[in-house]
Length: 370
Image (tube, rainbow, N blue to C red; front, side, top):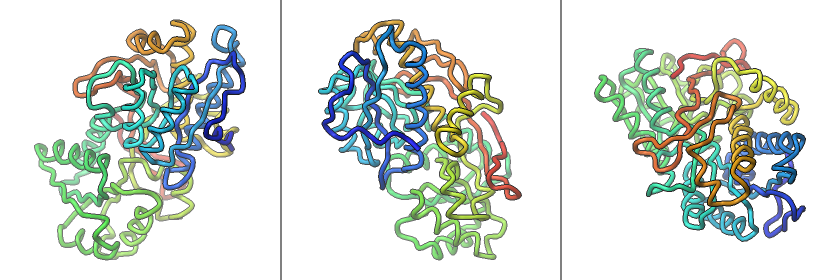
């Protein structure tokens, strides 16, 4: 499906190449399917850049490192890629991992365009070295909260595992819902068995359960248990982090995979560029591309434009975020400084709340857009 990652310590293949270090989760406990889609988008972008003459006649090359959802491994990879002389850094799906990578990139003076991670505090202090394509978690999850309210939900349970990312998500939901009449009931997914979790949902009269947990464990057994409990026949299960986006979700859960709303970052209709890229990604992946694959492609489109326009120099790349104006697969990409966000941010990628159609689980229904 995709090119395997470069082995640790491998030297670049072409001394004349412009090199981008790519961070992707390709092994467990990373979300491997997300990593494969991200890498497919990055690779397609690189292939098209090279078919169009490269970077001022020089080939563009990816130097791939598997982060396996491990922040320390990602930080070490950034150090290694910097030593190898990459001109910029791209990628990463997991927010906590991207945060570690961003901290090292900032410290080393290595420009990093983060493709997919959404955690608001990607860096603790403002930095010129890091920019991001994915919308900040606070933006997307507030749109998700508005969807819940519009659907009539006021007592919303969250089954959460310990994580900076999940804790931030729960806080965003709570802060947005409380002034609007919503109540967030927090349940510890690590301490409760799926059966005990169902009991808590009944006792708390929750009308919605949000999965702030890893995939496939414990998300899949929780969904199965809730779907099998006749007391919870009317409850809505939601997954704002996007677990149902990927084919593995439908494979593991079958009919239970449908009608679980999640966030994705696509427009209602793709542009001609987006449609062409979707076709190429589908051929590359052997399945429908997720929004993460588009994020990968757009990452390379932005970096190629910057490197062509401002030269292959780390400082000039980092100094050019404010001047980016690139047609991406999902709209015009420009970066700005946004209150509460310490990196250069695309404001905003399109946001949808979608689910899998119960009548046809391979088809997605758009329920809400923001």
